[in-house]
Image (cartoon, rainbow, N blue to C red; front, side):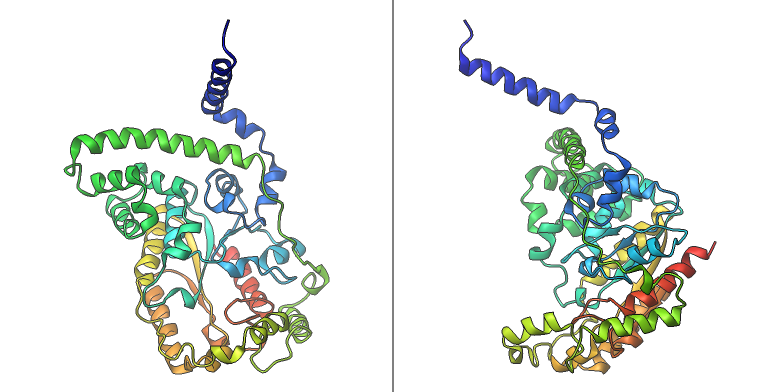
Length: 391
């Protein structure tokens, strides 16, 4: 007679084997177009740390995705997703980004999707506050890091070898990557051209293939249960059948109802600042400077991977809230040096970009201290229309 404990172990092993060997194509068949559409506005790690949903989205012929950080979930009637839907634009959007996401996490994501990016028009929003003296820190990197993307990078033969090596070398600077002994060994083996611990390196490469396959399977299973999409806060009449000037006027009225302080910050957020003793923020950026940062090298990785993939990106340089930055004593002349450096970097790389830096004192362009919204979205919507129309 088979003991109950052994039987339970046998059942568990059978279930695990079924989980591992269940054909990927069968799992994919259960993920509907409705699930994919819902994922476009979920702002979930399931989307940006995985692969499958993005593959499906990028394969849509009229998709023009937006990549950035926390500004992407500032949904209002003028948000690009709402705008494209309400105006029956010839393109659709989906968002990849959340708070703490910066260039290096997007580089990993683009590398994993390289085969789906050729000739694809995408929008990449650059935030000034990324460019701190120390750049991306572990606190922001770790929760946004995709182990699946990191393993894929080591085995991705579509990427230029030098570019892949630059990416792996940069990733090894983060503790999250270094704590993964298997991945670290693979990266070091690849970076040494197979000379670093060759026997252990080859064994690690074989084990890494298995790990990557398990992570891909996990991504598919998670994709069967997508998170509900965000509340869109849509109001079609503010954008549909409206000229650009009318949309701007609507956005100003929308902002006027939500801002009544000299720092031009949305009232509900301003109230939180006051409750947290707003005086303590006065002068907090006196010594900050966004012109020297490792983030520039990370942004270069993004530019280079998109070129390598044959994508057609539009970079968007957004401003900060000038009123707030004056209050925190990061002066306009120092901000201008950052804007000029960003403009020069994008120009030198020969990539198309939109420079919104002249709007840092423009009321209702920024909704709080740093996040584009309302009027800012209206200006960006117009640029998306223009960019999509270009051949």
